[in-house]
Length: 114
Image 1 (tube, helix red, strand yellow):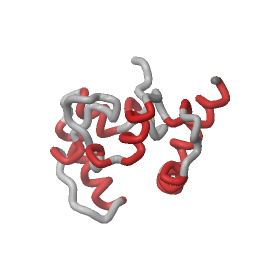
Image 2 (cartoon, rainbow, N blue to C red):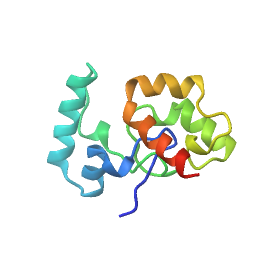
Image 3 (cartoon, rainbow, N blue to C red):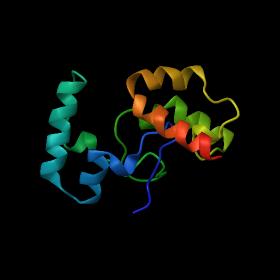
Image 4 (tube, helix red, strand yellow):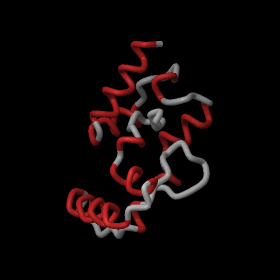
């Protein structure tokens, strides 16, 4: 399977919520919801973590997908992901990297290959 890399650099196809959704694995979704509930100090259900990936315009999406500023900016600028943006790396993205440093590693690798 080809990797789905979100605008921010997260690899959707490596995400346990994405994998469980694609496999229609309700038990795995429950485990993801439990783990993320603890990790993010919130309450999530299996239905809350259903996800078809950030690049899918239709379907189910985790969390703040509908209000994600990084996604909205990338769509507006018509870039495949933030590594392709002439304004890389912006303040919004740098804040996100504090939460998800692996996303920065992914985008940096893409930029080096451009």
